[in-house]
Length: 554
Image 1 (cartoon, rainbow, N blue to C red):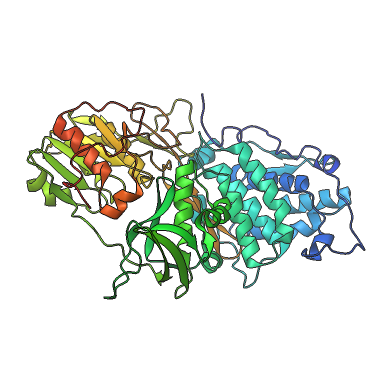
Image 2: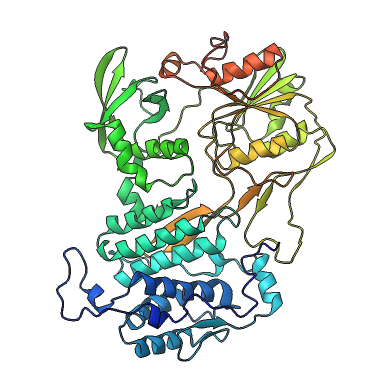
Protein backbone atom coordinates (compact mmCIF):
# COMPACT_ATOMS: atom_id res chain seq x y z
CA UNK A 1 0.00 0.00 0.00
CA UNK A 2 1.30 3.41 -0.90
CA UNK A 3 1.01 6.08 1.79
CA UNK A 4 1.74 9.43 0.17
CA UNK A 5 -0.11 12.69 0.16
CA UNK A 6 0.89 13.23 -3.43
CA UNK A 7 0.14 9.78 -4.83
CA UNK A 8 -2.68 11.18 -7.01
CA UNK A 9 -0.88 14.28 -8.17
CA UNK A 10 1.23 12.59 -10.85
CA UNK A 11 -1.90 11.53 -12.72
CA UNK A 12 -4.65 13.60 -14.26
CA UNK A 13 -7.10 14.28 -11.43
CA UNK A 14 -10.25 16.31 -11.11
CA UNK A 15 -10.26 18.74 -8.21
CA UNK A 16 -13.81 18.29 -7.02
CA UNK A 17 -15.09 21.23 -9.05
CA UNK A 18 -16.95 18.81 -11.33
CA UNK A 19 -19.60 20.97 -13.02
CA UNK A 20 -19.32 23.38 -10.11
CA UNK A 21 -21.23 26.14 -11.83
CA UNK A 22 -24.20 23.87 -12.46
CA UNK A 23 -24.18 22.02 -9.14
CA UNK A 24 -23.63 25.12 -6.99
CA UNK A 25 -25.89 27.86 -8.41
CA UNK A 26 -25.57 31.33 -6.95
CA UNK A 27 -28.50 33.27 -5.55
CA UNK A 28 -28.56 36.99 -6.19
CA UNK A 29 -29.35 39.32 -3.30
CA UNK A 30 -29.08 42.61 -5.20
CA UNK A 31 -31.19 45.30 -3.61
CA UNK A 32 -32.01 43.28 -0.47
CA UNK A 33 -31.54 44.56 3.05
CA UNK A 34 -28.51 43.12 4.92
CA UNK A 35 -29.32 40.93 7.89
CA UNK A 36 -28.53 42.38 11.34
CA UNK A 37 -24.94 41.63 12.36
CA UNK A 38 -23.85 40.80 8.82
CA UNK A 39 -21.69 43.00 6.63
CA UNK A 40 -23.17 44.61 3.50
CA UNK A 41 -20.29 43.10 1.49
CA UNK A 42 -21.91 39.67 1.78
CA UNK A 43 -24.65 40.84 -0.55
CA UNK A 44 -22.13 41.48 -3.30
CA UNK A 45 -20.42 38.14 -2.68
CA UNK A 46 -23.27 35.64 -2.60
CA UNK A 47 -21.06 32.58 -2.16
CA UNK A 48 -22.73 29.41 -0.99
CA UNK A 49 -20.76 27.00 1.21
CA UNK A 50 -20.74 24.57 -1.73
CA UNK A 51 -19.11 27.14 -4.00
CA UNK A 52 -16.53 28.02 -1.35
CA UNK A 53 -15.78 24.33 -0.80
CA UNK A 54 -15.15 24.02 -4.53
CA UNK A 55 -12.85 27.04 -4.45
CA UNK A 56 -11.07 25.54 -1.45
CA UNK A 57 -10.40 22.47 -3.60
CA UNK A 58 -8.86 24.74 -6.24
CA UNK A 59 -6.63 26.33 -3.60
CA UNK A 60 -5.66 22.91 -2.24
CA UNK A 61 -4.67 21.45 -5.60
CA UNK A 62 -2.69 24.47 -6.73
CA UNK A 63 -1.02 25.01 -3.36
CA UNK A 64 -0.08 21.41 -2.57
CA UNK A 65 -0.40 19.32 -5.71
CA UNK A 66 -0.18 21.44 -8.81
CA UNK A 67 2.81 23.75 -8.48
CA UNK A 68 6.42 22.83 -9.06
CA UNK A 69 7.33 26.14 -7.46
CA UNK A 70 5.23 29.24 -6.92
CA UNK A 71 6.78 32.18 -8.82
CA UNK A 72 8.14 34.60 -6.19
CA UNK A 73 6.23 37.53 -7.66
CA UNK A 74 2.88 35.73 -7.17
CA UNK A 75 1.19 35.83 -3.78
CA UNK A 76 -1.22 32.91 -4.27
CA UNK A 77 -3.11 33.59 -1.07
CA UNK A 78 -3.71 37.25 -1.89
CA UNK A 79 -4.55 36.40 -5.49
CA UNK A 80 -7.18 33.90 -4.32
CA UNK A 81 -8.71 36.22 -1.71
CA UNK A 82 -8.93 39.18 -4.05
CA UNK A 83 -10.52 36.99 -6.74
CA UNK A 84 -13.46 35.91 -4.57
CA UNK A 85 -15.46 38.97 -5.67
CA UNK A 86 -15.30 37.76 -9.26
CA UNK A 87 -15.55 34.03 -8.48
CA UNK A 88 -18.66 34.42 -6.36
CA UNK A 89 -21.04 35.86 -8.91
CA UNK A 90 -24.36 34.52 -10.10
CA UNK A 91 -23.45 34.57 -13.80
CA UNK A 92 -21.75 31.20 -14.54
CA UNK A 93 -19.93 32.57 -17.59
CA UNK A 94 -18.36 35.39 -15.59
CA UNK A 95 -17.44 32.99 -12.77
CA UNK A 96 -15.75 30.59 -15.17
CA UNK A 97 -13.83 33.44 -16.80
CA UNK A 98 -12.67 34.56 -13.34
CA UNK A 99 -11.47 31.03 -12.55
CA UNK A 100 -9.50 30.91 -15.79
CA UNK A 101 -7.86 34.27 -14.98
CA UNK A 102 -7.03 33.08 -11.47
CA UNK A 103 -5.20 30.01 -12.78
CA UNK A 104 -3.48 31.72 -15.72
CA UNK A 105 0.01 32.00 -14.08
CA UNK A 106 0.14 28.28 -13.33
CA UNK A 107 0.84 26.16 -16.42
CA UNK A 108 0.57 22.91 -14.47
CA UNK A 109 -3.12 23.57 -13.76
CA UNK A 110 -5.80 24.20 -16.36
CA UNK A 111 -9.52 24.93 -16.27
CA UNK A 112 -11.34 22.87 -18.87
CA UNK A 113 -13.47 25.08 -21.16
CA UNK A 114 -17.21 24.85 -20.71
CA UNK A 115 -17.20 22.65 -17.61
CA UNK A 116 -15.63 24.57 -14.75
CA UNK A 117 -13.47 21.51 -14.00
CA UNK A 118 -9.84 21.92 -12.94
CA UNK A 119 -7.29 19.33 -13.98
CA UNK A 120 -3.63 18.72 -13.10
CA UNK A 121 -1.11 17.98 -15.78
CA UNK A 122 1.57 15.37 -15.08
CA UNK A 123 4.43 16.73 -12.99
CA UNK A 124 8.10 15.69 -13.18
CA UNK A 125 8.79 12.83 -10.76
CA UNK A 126 11.83 14.55 -9.29
CA UNK A 127 9.66 17.47 -8.20
CA UNK A 128 7.16 15.17 -6.52
CA UNK A 129 9.96 13.29 -4.77
CA UNK A 130 11.42 16.57 -3.54
CA UNK A 131 8.07 17.48 -2.04
CA UNK A 132 7.67 14.03 -0.52
CA UNK A 133 11.09 14.21 1.13
CA UNK A 134 10.30 17.57 2.65
CA UNK A 135 12.87 19.47 0.58
CA UNK A 136 10.17 22.00 -0.30
CA UNK A 137 9.07 23.09 3.15
CA UNK A 138 5.67 24.81 2.90
CA UNK A 139 6.11 26.75 6.13
CA UNK A 140 9.45 28.21 5.04
CA UNK A 141 8.65 29.15 1.45
CA UNK A 142 5.10 30.36 2.10
CA UNK A 143 4.71 34.09 2.88
CA UNK A 144 2.91 35.13 6.02
CA UNK A 145 -0.72 36.15 5.73
CA UNK A 146 -1.57 39.88 5.97
CA UNK A 147 -1.85 41.12 9.55
CA UNK A 148 -4.65 43.72 9.29
CA UNK A 149 -5.26 46.32 12.00
CA UNK A 150 -8.96 45.56 12.23
CA UNK A 151 -10.98 42.41 11.59
CA UNK A 152 -10.19 41.21 8.03
CA UNK A 153 -12.74 41.73 5.27
CA UNK A 154 -15.08 38.83 4.61
CA UNK A 155 -13.05 37.52 1.66
CA UNK A 156 -9.97 37.26 3.89
CA UNK A 157 -11.94 35.62 6.70
CA UNK A 158 -13.12 32.99 4.25
CA UNK A 159 -9.53 32.73 3.06
CA UNK A 160 -8.45 31.96 6.64
CA UNK A 161 -10.84 28.99 6.78
CA UNK A 162 -9.75 27.81 3.32
CA UNK A 163 -6.05 28.04 4.14
CA UNK A 164 -6.44 26.31 7.51
CA UNK A 165 -8.57 23.51 6.01
CA UNK A 166 -6.11 22.93 3.16
CA UNK A 167 -2.94 23.10 5.27
CA UNK A 168 -4.22 20.54 7.76
CA UNK A 169 -5.29 18.15 4.99
CA UNK A 170 -1.84 18.42 3.42
CA UNK A 171 0.52 18.43 6.37
CA UNK A 172 -1.25 16.86 9.36
CA UNK A 173 -1.24 13.25 10.54
CA UNK A 174 -1.42 10.92 7.50
CA UNK A 175 -2.97 7.88 9.21
CA UNK A 176 -5.21 9.23 11.96
CA UNK A 177 -6.40 12.54 10.48
CA UNK A 178 -10.20 13.02 11.04
CA UNK A 179 -10.95 13.96 7.43
CA UNK A 180 -14.75 13.80 7.58
CA UNK A 181 -15.05 15.86 10.77
CA UNK A 182 -12.57 18.37 9.36
CA UNK A 183 -14.72 18.87 6.26
CA UNK A 184 -17.77 19.47 8.45
CA UNK A 185 -15.81 21.94 10.59
CA UNK A 186 -14.79 23.81 7.43
CA UNK A 187 -18.42 24.11 6.29
CA UNK A 188 -19.45 25.40 9.73
CA UNK A 189 -16.62 27.97 9.73
CA UNK A 190 -17.61 29.19 6.25
CA UNK A 191 -21.20 29.62 7.45
CA UNK A 192 -20.08 31.51 10.58
CA UNK A 193 -17.59 33.90 8.96
CA UNK A 194 -20.12 36.48 7.62
CA UNK A 195 -21.27 37.19 11.18
CA UNK A 196 -17.69 37.25 12.55
CA UNK A 197 -17.46 41.03 12.27
CA UNK A 198 -15.33 41.56 15.39
CA UNK A 199 -11.87 40.29 16.27
CA UNK A 200 -13.21 38.12 19.10
CA UNK A 201 -15.87 36.52 16.88
CA UNK A 202 -13.33 35.88 14.12
CA UNK A 203 -10.91 34.30 16.59
CA UNK A 204 -13.65 32.14 18.11
CA UNK A 205 -14.75 30.79 14.70
CA UNK A 206 -11.19 29.58 14.03
CA UNK A 207 -10.87 28.17 17.56
CA UNK A 208 -14.09 26.18 17.12
CA UNK A 209 -12.85 24.91 13.77
CA UNK A 210 -9.65 23.59 15.36
CA UNK A 211 -11.58 21.59 17.97
CA UNK A 212 -12.69 19.17 15.22
CA UNK A 213 -9.10 17.89 15.05
CA UNK A 214 -9.25 16.27 18.51
CA UNK A 215 -5.59 17.30 18.69
CA UNK A 216 -4.01 18.50 21.92
CA UNK A 217 -1.41 20.42 19.89
CA UNK A 218 -4.11 22.40 18.05
CA UNK A 219 -3.84 25.99 19.21
CA UNK A 220 -4.60 29.43 17.85
CA UNK A 221 -1.92 31.96 18.68
CA UNK A 222 -1.27 35.62 17.93
CA UNK A 223 -2.04 39.10 19.21
CA UNK A 224 -5.83 38.83 18.87
CA UNK A 225 -5.82 35.46 20.59
CA UNK A 226 -3.75 36.90 23.44
CA UNK A 227 -6.21 39.77 23.73
CA UNK A 228 -9.09 37.28 23.77
CA UNK A 229 -7.88 35.08 26.65
CA UNK A 230 -5.25 37.28 28.30
CA UNK A 231 -1.50 36.94 28.74
CA UNK A 232 -1.54 36.51 32.50
CA UNK A 233 -2.32 33.54 34.74
CA UNK A 234 -3.81 33.19 38.17
CA UNK A 235 -1.22 31.84 40.67
CA UNK A 236 -2.93 28.43 40.96
CA UNK A 237 -3.11 25.22 38.96
CA UNK A 238 -6.52 23.56 39.03
CA UNK A 239 -7.10 19.83 38.60
CA UNK A 240 -9.91 17.34 39.07
CA UNK A 241 -9.74 15.12 42.13
CA UNK A 242 -12.64 12.75 42.62
CA UNK A 243 -15.93 14.57 41.98
CA UNK A 244 -14.53 18.08 42.47
CA UNK A 245 -12.01 20.63 41.18
CA UNK A 246 -9.14 21.38 43.54
CA UNK A 247 -6.11 23.62 43.75
CA UNK A 248 -3.36 21.17 42.80
CA UNK A 249 -0.47 23.63 43.02
CA UNK A 250 0.15 27.18 44.11
CA UNK A 251 2.42 29.12 41.79
CA UNK A 252 5.07 31.46 43.12
CA UNK A 253 4.51 35.17 42.40
CA UNK A 254 7.88 36.43 43.56
CA UNK A 255 6.70 38.34 46.66
CA UNK A 256 6.98 37.42 50.32
CA UNK A 257 3.26 37.47 51.07
CA UNK A 258 1.73 34.11 51.96
CA UNK A 259 -0.41 32.73 49.11
CA UNK A 260 -4.14 33.22 49.45
CA UNK A 261 -4.88 29.77 47.99
CA UNK A 262 -3.75 26.48 49.47
CA UNK A 263 -3.13 23.16 47.82
CA UNK A 264 -6.21 21.02 48.40
CA UNK A 265 -8.75 23.87 48.36
CA UNK A 266 -11.92 22.66 46.62
CA UNK A 267 -13.03 25.28 44.09
CA UNK A 268 -16.78 26.01 44.07
CA UNK A 269 -17.14 29.16 41.94
CA UNK A 270 -14.99 31.46 39.79
CA UNK A 271 -16.22 35.06 39.70
CA UNK A 272 -19.58 33.88 41.12
CA UNK A 273 -20.03 31.33 38.32
CA UNK A 274 -20.16 27.67 39.41
CA UNK A 275 -16.95 26.02 38.30
CA UNK A 276 -18.87 23.39 36.30
CA UNK A 277 -20.63 26.13 34.30
CA UNK A 278 -17.38 28.03 33.80
CA UNK A 279 -15.78 24.91 32.36
CA UNK A 280 -18.76 24.30 30.06
CA UNK A 281 -18.41 27.80 28.60
CA UNK A 282 -14.77 27.19 27.60
CA UNK A 283 -14.97 23.55 26.54
CA UNK A 284 -16.20 24.28 22.96
CA UNK A 285 -12.91 26.09 22.27
CA UNK A 286 -10.60 23.28 23.43
CA UNK A 287 -9.18 20.66 21.09
CA UNK A 288 -8.29 17.30 22.65
CA UNK A 289 -9.09 13.66 21.98
CA UNK A 290 -10.06 12.35 25.41
CA UNK A 291 -12.44 13.72 28.01
CA UNK A 292 -9.67 13.95 30.61
CA UNK A 293 -7.28 15.88 28.35
CA UNK A 294 -10.04 18.25 27.22
CA UNK A 295 -10.89 18.91 30.86
CA UNK A 296 -7.23 19.52 31.69
CA UNK A 297 -6.89 22.18 28.98
CA UNK A 298 -10.22 23.72 29.97
CA UNK A 299 -9.07 24.13 33.57
CA UNK A 300 -5.84 25.77 32.41
CA UNK A 301 -7.89 28.14 30.25
CA UNK A 302 -9.98 29.17 33.28
CA UNK A 303 -6.87 30.56 34.98
CA UNK A 304 -5.98 32.85 32.06
CA UNK A 305 -6.65 36.57 32.54
CA UNK A 306 -5.20 39.89 31.36
CA UNK A 307 -2.18 40.80 33.46
CA UNK A 308 -3.29 42.71 36.56
CA UNK A 309 -6.90 41.50 36.44
CA UNK A 310 -8.22 39.80 39.56
CA UNK A 311 -10.55 36.84 39.96
CA UNK A 312 -12.60 35.73 42.93
CA UNK A 313 -12.58 32.05 43.81
CA UNK A 314 -14.93 30.59 46.40
CA UNK A 315 -13.30 27.50 47.90
CA UNK A 316 -14.09 24.97 50.57
CA UNK A 317 -11.28 24.54 53.09
CA UNK A 318 -11.54 22.41 56.22
CA UNK A 319 -15.33 22.47 56.06
CA UNK A 320 -15.60 26.26 55.60
CA UNK A 321 -16.33 28.29 52.45
CA UNK A 322 -13.83 31.10 51.83
CA UNK A 323 -13.65 33.79 49.11
CA UNK A 324 -10.15 34.30 47.67
CA UNK A 325 -9.08 37.22 45.47
CA UNK A 326 -6.25 36.24 43.14
CA UNK A 327 -4.31 38.51 40.80
CA UNK A 328 -3.21 37.40 37.34
CA UNK A 329 0.50 37.87 36.69
CA UNK A 330 2.59 37.30 33.61
CA UNK A 331 4.12 33.81 33.44
CA UNK A 332 4.29 33.01 37.18
CA UNK A 333 7.08 30.57 37.93
CA UNK A 334 6.20 27.12 39.23
CA UNK A 335 8.05 26.17 42.37
CA UNK A 336 9.96 22.89 42.10
CA UNK A 337 8.77 20.77 45.00
CA UNK A 338 11.33 17.94 44.80
CA UNK A 339 14.79 17.31 43.35
CA UNK A 340 15.29 15.82 39.90
CA UNK A 341 16.88 12.63 41.25
CA UNK A 342 17.15 10.92 44.61
CA UNK A 343 17.27 7.54 46.30
CA UNK A 344 13.94 6.50 47.82
CA UNK A 345 15.57 3.45 49.44
CA UNK A 346 18.74 1.40 49.11
CA UNK A 347 17.40 -0.37 46.03
CA UNK A 348 15.01 2.19 44.50
CA UNK A 349 16.02 5.35 42.63
CA UNK A 350 13.80 8.22 41.46
CA UNK A 351 14.30 10.40 38.37
CA UNK A 352 12.09 13.33 37.29
CA UNK A 353 12.65 13.84 33.55
CA UNK A 354 10.95 17.25 33.64
CA UNK A 355 13.77 18.62 35.78
CA UNK A 356 16.93 17.24 34.16
CA UNK A 357 18.71 17.27 30.80
CA UNK A 358 22.11 15.75 31.56
CA UNK A 359 21.99 12.32 33.20
CA UNK A 360 25.73 12.26 33.83
CA UNK A 361 25.12 14.54 36.82
CA UNK A 362 23.08 11.83 38.59
CA UNK A 363 25.17 8.77 37.63
CA UNK A 364 26.74 8.35 41.09
CA UNK A 365 23.35 8.65 42.78
CA UNK A 366 21.34 6.23 40.64
CA UNK A 367 23.94 3.70 39.52
CA UNK A 368 23.36 0.36 41.19
CA UNK A 369 19.66 0.85 41.90
CA UNK A 370 17.70 -2.34 41.29
CA UNK A 371 14.53 -0.40 40.40
CA UNK A 372 14.35 3.01 38.76
CA UNK A 373 11.13 5.05 39.02
CA UNK A 374 10.99 7.61 36.21
CA UNK A 375 8.50 10.46 36.56
CA UNK A 376 6.92 11.49 33.24
CA UNK A 377 3.88 13.29 34.63
CA UNK A 378 5.26 16.63 33.47
CA UNK A 379 6.78 17.63 30.17
CA UNK A 380 10.29 16.11 29.89
CA UNK A 381 13.39 17.99 28.79
CA UNK A 382 14.82 15.51 26.30
CA UNK A 383 16.77 13.15 28.56
CA UNK A 384 14.68 10.09 27.61
CA UNK A 385 17.00 9.25 24.68
CA UNK A 386 20.04 9.17 26.97
CA UNK A 387 18.07 7.15 29.53
CA UNK A 388 16.99 4.62 26.89
CA UNK A 389 20.62 4.15 25.85
CA UNK A 390 21.56 3.41 29.48
CA UNK A 391 18.69 0.98 30.09
CA UNK A 392 18.65 -1.03 26.88
CA UNK A 393 19.86 -4.61 27.06
CA UNK A 394 20.78 -5.23 23.42
CA UNK A 395 23.66 -3.30 21.77
CA UNK A 396 21.38 -1.73 19.12
CA UNK A 397 17.66 -0.96 19.15
CA UNK A 398 15.18 0.81 16.89
CA UNK A 399 13.27 3.79 18.23
CA UNK A 400 9.56 4.53 17.75
CA UNK A 401 8.81 6.25 14.48
CA UNK A 402 7.69 9.82 13.82
CA UNK A 403 5.89 9.32 10.51
CA UNK A 404 5.44 12.62 8.71
CA UNK A 405 3.14 12.99 5.68
CA UNK A 406 6.00 13.76 3.29
CA UNK A 407 8.14 10.80 4.37
CA UNK A 408 8.68 8.12 1.77
CA UNK A 409 6.97 8.64 -1.57
CA UNK A 410 8.10 5.50 -3.37
CA UNK A 411 6.29 2.19 -2.93
CA UNK A 412 7.88 0.23 -0.09
CA UNK A 413 10.35 3.02 0.72
CA UNK A 414 12.17 2.63 4.04
CA UNK A 415 11.15 5.44 6.39
CA UNK A 416 14.18 6.56 8.42
CA UNK A 417 14.11 6.21 12.19
CA UNK A 418 16.58 6.76 15.02
CA UNK A 419 18.89 3.84 15.81
CA UNK A 420 19.64 3.61 19.52
CA UNK A 421 23.01 2.32 20.69
CA UNK A 422 23.66 1.21 24.24
CA UNK A 423 25.53 3.78 26.31
CA UNK A 424 28.89 3.10 27.91
CA UNK A 425 27.25 3.60 31.30
CA UNK A 426 24.64 0.86 31.75
CA UNK A 427 21.89 0.93 34.36
CA UNK A 428 20.58 -2.67 34.65
CA UNK A 429 17.53 -1.54 36.61
CA UNK A 430 13.92 -2.56 36.64
CA UNK A 431 11.87 0.26 35.14
CA UNK A 432 8.68 1.86 36.50
CA UNK A 433 7.24 4.96 34.75
CA UNK A 434 4.85 7.38 36.42
CA UNK A 435 2.29 8.75 33.94
CA UNK A 436 -0.86 10.86 34.16
CA UNK A 437 -3.23 13.29 32.48
CA UNK A 438 -0.39 15.78 31.88
CA UNK A 439 1.84 13.23 30.12
CA UNK A 440 1.64 14.47 26.56
CA UNK A 441 3.58 14.79 23.30
CA UNK A 442 7.26 14.14 24.14
CA UNK A 443 6.14 12.56 27.42
CA UNK A 444 4.05 9.96 25.54
CA UNK A 445 6.87 9.38 23.07
CA UNK A 446 9.35 8.95 25.94
CA UNK A 447 7.26 6.09 27.35
CA UNK A 448 7.22 4.39 23.92
CA UNK A 449 10.96 4.98 23.60
CA UNK A 450 11.71 3.35 26.95
CA UNK A 451 9.37 0.46 26.13
CA UNK A 452 11.36 -0.17 22.94
CA UNK A 453 14.51 -1.01 24.92
CA UNK A 454 13.30 -2.60 28.17
CA UNK A 455 10.23 -3.77 30.09
CA UNK A 456 8.41 -0.79 31.59
CA UNK A 457 5.69 -0.90 34.25
CA UNK A 458 3.45 2.18 33.99
CA UNK A 459 1.67 3.51 37.08
CA UNK A 460 -0.77 6.40 37.37
CA UNK A 461 -3.55 7.54 35.05
CA UNK A 462 -4.27 7.51 31.33
CA UNK A 463 -2.09 9.95 29.46
CA UNK A 464 -3.08 13.08 27.57
CA UNK A 465 -3.22 11.39 24.16
CA UNK A 466 -1.16 13.69 21.92
CA UNK A 467 1.92 12.60 20.00
CA UNK A 468 4.24 14.00 17.40
CA UNK A 469 5.95 17.15 16.21
CA UNK A 470 4.17 20.47 15.84
CA UNK A 471 3.70 22.42 12.60
CA UNK A 472 2.08 25.82 12.18
CA UNK A 473 0.36 27.88 9.51
CA UNK A 474 -0.04 31.66 9.27
CA UNK A 475 -3.59 33.04 8.97
CA UNK A 476 -4.95 36.50 8.11
CA UNK A 477 -4.89 38.91 11.02
CA UNK A 478 -1.50 37.97 12.44
CA UNK A 479 -2.79 34.64 13.75
CA UNK A 480 -0.95 31.32 13.74
CA UNK A 481 -2.56 27.89 14.08
CA UNK A 482 -0.46 24.98 15.36
CA UNK A 483 -1.25 21.27 15.00
CA UNK A 484 0.32 17.80 15.06
CA UNK A 485 2.21 17.14 11.83
CA UNK A 486 2.85 13.41 12.08
CA UNK A 487 1.69 10.07 13.42
CA UNK A 488 3.82 8.05 15.85
CA UNK A 489 4.39 4.32 15.50
CA UNK A 490 5.93 1.99 18.04
CA UNK A 491 9.27 0.33 17.40
CA UNK A 492 7.52 -2.87 16.29
CA UNK A 493 5.41 -1.02 13.71
CA UNK A 494 2.11 -0.45 15.53
CA UNK A 495 0.33 2.90 15.39
CA UNK A 496 0.54 4.51 18.83
CA UNK A 497 -2.91 4.75 20.47
CA UNK A 498 -4.24 8.22 19.72
CA UNK A 499 -6.33 8.22 22.88
CA UNK A 500 -3.21 7.95 25.06
CA UNK A 501 -1.42 5.28 27.05
CA UNK A 502 -3.34 3.27 29.62
CA UNK A 503 -1.30 2.53 32.77
CA UNK A 504 -0.65 -1.01 33.94
CA UNK A 505 -1.68 0.12 37.43
CA UNK A 506 -4.34 2.82 37.65
CA UNK A 507 -4.20 5.14 40.68
CA UNK A 508 -6.95 7.60 41.62
CA UNK A 509 -5.96 10.81 43.41
CA UNK A 510 -8.47 12.28 45.86
CA UNK A 511 -8.80 15.87 47.11
CA UNK A 512 -7.51 14.72 50.51
CA UNK A 513 -4.23 13.62 48.89
CA UNK A 514 -3.56 17.14 47.59
CA UNK A 515 -4.46 18.69 50.93
CA UNK A 516 -2.20 16.29 52.85
CA UNK A 517 0.69 16.59 50.38
CA UNK A 518 0.58 12.90 49.48
CA UNK A 519 1.60 11.46 46.14
CA UNK A 520 -0.34 8.17 45.86
CA UNK A 521 1.05 7.48 42.36
CA UNK A 522 4.62 7.48 43.61
CA UNK A 523 3.57 5.53 46.69
CA UNK A 524 1.97 2.85 44.51
CA UNK A 525 5.16 2.61 42.44
CA UNK A 526 7.21 2.22 45.61
CA UNK A 527 4.89 -0.54 46.81
CA UNK A 528 5.36 -2.42 43.53
CA UNK A 529 9.13 -1.90 43.61
CA UNK A 530 9.77 -2.93 47.20
CA UNK A 531 7.29 -5.81 47.24
CA UNK A 532 8.91 -7.21 44.12
CA UNK A 533 5.53 -7.59 42.50
CA UNK A 534 5.00 -8.18 38.82
CA UNK A 535 3.46 -5.26 36.96
CA UNK A 536 0.13 -6.65 35.77
CA UNK A 537 -2.77 -4.57 34.53
CA UNK A 538 -5.48 -3.94 37.14
CA UNK A 539 -9.13 -3.57 36.23
CA UNK A 540 -10.01 -1.52 39.30
CA UNK A 541 -8.22 1.73 40.24
CA UNK A 542 -5.80 1.62 43.13
CA UNK A 543 -7.22 3.85 45.86
CA UNK A 544 -4.41 4.65 48.30
CA UNK A 545 -3.86 1.04 49.38
CA UNK A 546 -0.13 1.50 49.98
CA UNK A 547 1.14 1.97 53.53
CA UNK A 548 4.08 4.09 52.32
CA UNK A 549 2.30 7.42 51.77
CA UNK A 550 4.43 9.19 54.38
CA UNK A 551 7.67 8.06 52.72
CA UNK A 552 7.04 9.77 49.40
CA UNK A 553 5.10 12.86 50.36
CA UNK A 554 5.30 15.92 48.17
